[in-house]
Length: 234
Image (cartoon, rainbow, N blue to C red; front, top):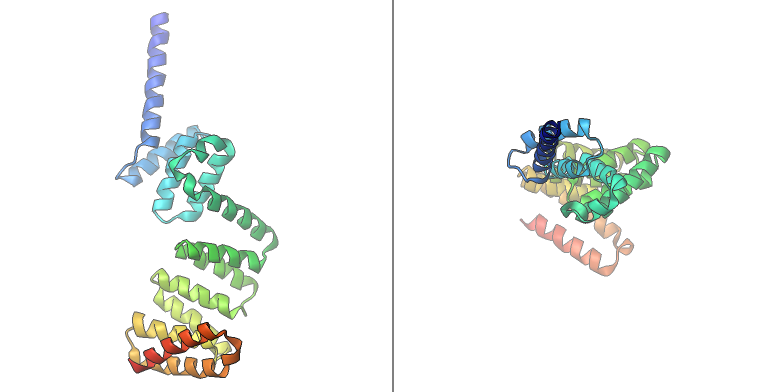
């Protein structure tokens, strides 16, 4: 009997070791690791070691929202473990994002969606930034500067045609919009390699800037004017 129990104990210790090997080891084949970890979590939904490894895989793939969700779930189960893990560096932002998303989902407040968008943009997570700005614009489509932020996020995410479309919507509503003309010029000049058409928009941007000179502080005005002037001379 003791021998049988010993064999059973050995079996479970081996299974445990294999589980943690999968969840603790950095793997080149992340797809294989992801599938194995997800299978383990079906049976062990509170396994924070596996949750953190899966969160890490999602973050590396750029699936930030899913990665943050897993990280926060793991933190809820075992705060000490998560705080002492390698992935803990992104925990404060993950917690903040989760809290803001919960608030935004309840209130559908455009200001919260915009804050989320700005946070993601500053971190260089442009796909998530674009998603947050879209949610804000669904609440209030007349936020021209937010639509331009959306355009920038799309451009950074190599979705240039969608970015151009977003800028054009602002220009349709406000043809003399300074920054809409400015960014349309930039996108056309550098992403579309169409310097001639870009110059038309840079000219409009300069005219708008000169008309709004008093609305800018000196440094911002001179820097923007210098940049537009250089673009027109190229």
